[in-house]
Image 1 (cartoon, rainbow, N blue to C red):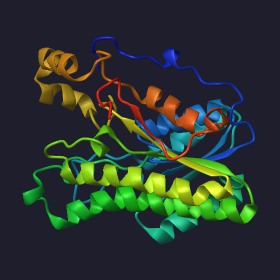
Image 2 (cartoon, rainbow, N blue to C red):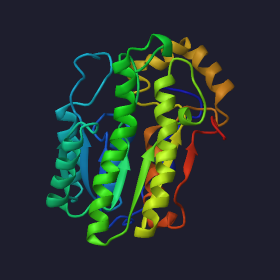
Image 3 (cartoon, rainbow, N blue to C red):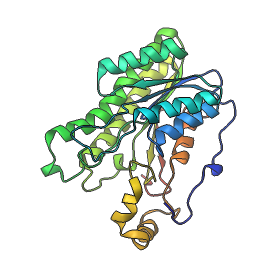
Image 4 (tube, rainbow, N blue to C red):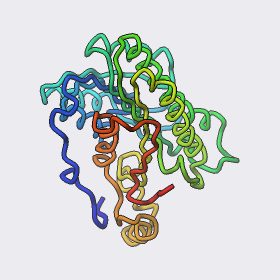
Length: 292
């Protein structure tokens, strides 16, 4: 999508060697033009071996809610391996405790103890919690909570337990949202879930800090990804070029939509030793769209 002041990856280049010798796990890793994929690639470029976890299949009862495919996940692993880094594809539904445990066990056996965790998987959309709360089917509301909140907890729990057992510290970063700090109509289930992630992050930071594990979150604004803007859908909903420009002028002080790479850059800063003194934070990365 073309929009005023569009960001580019050259504005936030990778930091060479920052994750050398580290093993990272990224959930929601495979979707093209997604925050998870951008994060996995950036971690690899900065030296990490990366376990790439994704459900990598559609939801049969929500076909309009786009997901990554097995091919997407495999291509990500190939891209990382081409950089000379280790990588493994993990097919798992993060709301399934047994699947999460098996995936983290495979990552550990294949690459070593995971000490860098990016919990990116989540979202909302058609058939996936989008709509008025009073009309929302119960199973959709629960699924949004399961994928966004329960899944983040399950992955964090599995990875933290192994860090503690291995007597190593680590870093985790969860993806919340500006919708975790302000309400949006038609996104009530998503707002509820993303607000919960902030308190989950803070609680885990307090509990895991004594074990040398930091836990933070990022709160993106409106990001031009295939989740938010598949095939130009967001622009169309805003009323085309003029409507999008009006939205940006009204809502976003920096005057542009964001891209996945700049969210990944913030995630990787919080996952690196550069943020050694930071834990329990919910960092706005929203181009000024949210300031609370």
